[in-house]
Image (cartoon, rainbow, N blue to C red; front, side, top):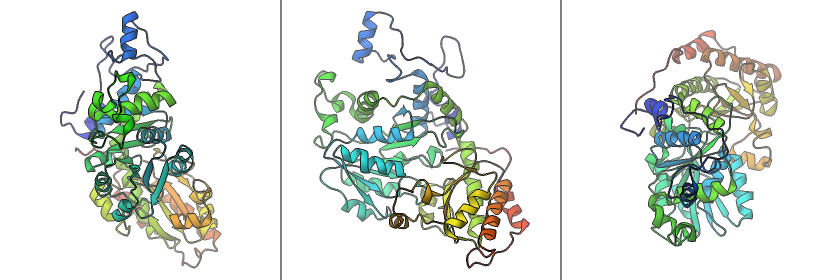
Length: 467
């Protein structure tokens, strides 16, 4: 099923569906098989030659996985997607589809620590260099970091935990002036909140384990090609795509596949060889989650804004990093790119430092203490001692990761219950700091304040907005 101008909620349910001609099943089957039968000798040869587009081996492709690929490509308004085993695998496949030894990447500094480690350790060992832009709003800094061997820009739409929203169009334009693509991690926004390709990005990656799935029951990742970048414009920049290949009968990937050159190379050469194959069962779970994406994300963002607004008024809290708040330095970008909401992963800082953070995290009962994001359940973590523990104290200060900073991934529970749990954590902070929040006058939270915030978030059935 192709996009015929349908709204987002329709596409997330119906997009990319191919009818089951054998049995008429409405839900695509889980094809739990390593390999696929060939009708005869000639069909096997044709499939390996690429002249027959049927399946050969699940590491190279699977009907269950392909259903998810088609659906996410439609939701991102992009040409094609590749499903892999995790979000980290998606970033790796995307970058290795662009880079080789001697190349250079310009990246935002505010990105997932795992991706930063991939750039600084794994890819560095392969002879690939990276420079980080400290203030990703500074487009001149992006341009100044470009070298003759720069091959890609990389950033995230909503980085965690600081919620420092990306100026997608500005960074994309800067990348294109340098002749390179912009790769954007859209995990925390999802295509429901923003589609980066519509703002100039060229390649989008997702950790599908997060909001796309929602249920926290399986891993997955996606590489999505916007299909708009001209890979042959400067042939010397991407020689692996523009040099004749024996496997393609002497043609280059650009000559054979045109605008699909990158995604075919990333699928057939990078993903197929490295082998981050997703289980078809995980693909099935992912597709089940995608079908309710807009409904869940609407509740996620409404709950998160209510919790962030509540926290901003508490004397024990020195700052709240949520771009949906007018106090955020990224509020203007959130209004521009994220009119449906600035996501539900954000951080707040307690005046009492690590002791206060420990008291808060240990006191909450509804919010789960775990390392994950985008779950239907609300989650809490202390970045300074977990995700960013490998950084020096000075580096954490530079990144804005203080000892009192707490990260929340707000779920879809009733907001009144979430606010009551947050207040339970703050009460523990007051008790741990002698009742004054470290120099701040504590006050009991009026029940009416919690009630008013809870009332502001719709708790009945949510109707998805149309695109």
